[in-house]
Image 1 (cartoon, helix red, strand yellow):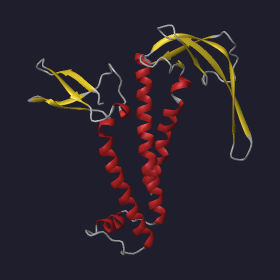
Image 2 (cartoon, one colour; image 1 turned 90 degrees about the vertical axis):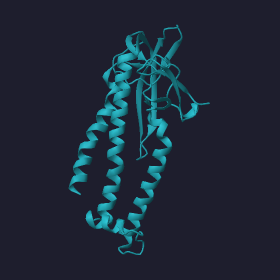
Image 3 (cartoon, helix red, strand yellow; image 1 turned 30 degrees about the vertical axis):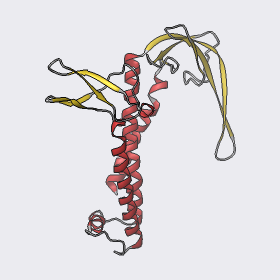
Image 4 (cartoon, one colour; image 1 turned 135 degrees about the horizontal axis):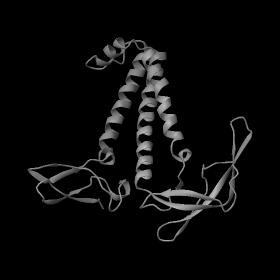
Length: 235
């Protein structure tokens, strides 16, 4: 089954567009708003403007990019033209950027880090803004603490204590946040009240409405982009 989106054209005509992706792969849910691209003269041939609609194209382009990068790596590593391409484009590219095994490794790593940080910052920030703008705020109550332990690389053990917070959604269903970052190791006690926010269609995914639940990861990814760009420029 594929999701179907109904829309109204600029002339008031009702039309529909069918997603290219199966329901299991779609990121949308019933009632969500999505952007539709259509030809005014033929609104029945409409397309959904969503990243998951072009997953197949992205996979193909990514696969081709990986093959080209591997080919360049072989040419740079061999130091010769044995693996030259038919149009001699890759050797010209290598000469233009003065690539050697070290420079290519750095540029390859940064070419993965920078886009990942950029997309991560964008999507996480968008997710936070959407939740803060359209989420439902309810009171939550501290019902206890949960201790979490993990082993470090050196064999030592690190532990942390997280407050467990229970809240009720608009239907009265109870949910529990088990790994809240709200004031860890603080003086919160059982029965204390905190503010919880959850998405309208996912009441079970509530989080404590504080900055440390939303912003540390996107801020970190955004800051990481600056030295990555500087390193790429210096290369």
